[in-house]
Image 1 (cartoon, helix red, strand yellow):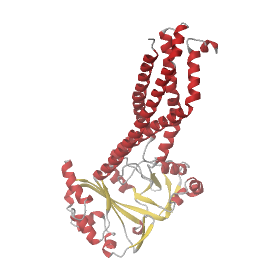
Image 2 (cartoon, rainbow, N blue to C red):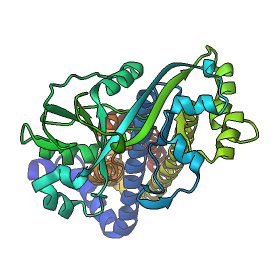
Image 3 (cartoon, one colour):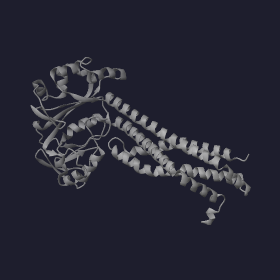
Image 4 (spheres, rainbow, N blue to C red):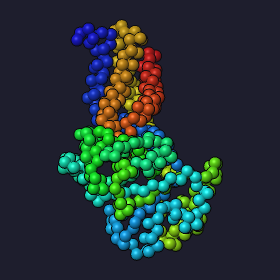
Length: 433
């Protein structure tokens, strides 16, 4: 391509680049990998932080969640482990709602407001395996590690709507022969949607057959969390013949009956303190009663702490790699400019003006800085997608764009500053004395 090759100093520039490729291929590869790490780590961590901040607000709509196992028998399963209960007080308490437990253990209920308590059921004949039906083998082959023996959580539609109204999220309606699946955990939603997409997908719940109202999972949850972790809740009509034996859990949600943050902190110690600071917890411990739960304050403190650590480490590593890469490139180019000073003198002698020489220098440094960055960006496209997939349920692809823009600004500022500084200093080095 003579029109390009013979134009201005392009022949000289290409020859210079060719020499650098032959002598710096190893170091340029390392620099490319460091830039790849910078882009991937910064983008992924910022996306994770953005997702955690956004979902934290969505998933903590009330001040308090409390839950306990219902209808404890002498032997029962918890978290996949068989447990034996000999505490008669705990077994007796498991027959009563949480509100009654709180009152019986000395809590002044005036500290709470907007109290909503619901019951969650399970059916031993409706597990994850039963839900997937004919698709089970296909799903298990793709995700062999899932606990397919887990019983589906079942909630009556009226109970859910009471909780949804308190949370300020979508409420639903059902006909007598319909059910709805609520799920917002991305990978689990994808699996369930493949089954529901068949249309009117039938399920047998408490001995009666129902059909799906929607061809995909709907959004919703009943317990607070730091992010979207609901793997599945089945809403059924109030007429569904759920029995007392199927009752798995009581769930209570409420707000603190105070206005200021300082007053909320005082009430917080009642539910998240210890047996010394909280009379309620002491009474529960004395009676051997297990009452679990979350508070908005504790969830937000934990989430903010994790997000801060992740972002700090990512920014530290990313900035270190970026500055190291930029500094190495700058030093190598400045060394090249010193070694090639005589060549630029020869260019002047054969008739090249300063504008052509500066343009030649700018092109060389631009290519020298640009090639590893472009390759790193190409690699990062796949690296970031992989990272987001690994962090499924924690980071959302919807939050990638703002984080990528932030990463571009950081790299543009630091990498661009080193590039310009290298160019101007190189120009001074080759300047005719």
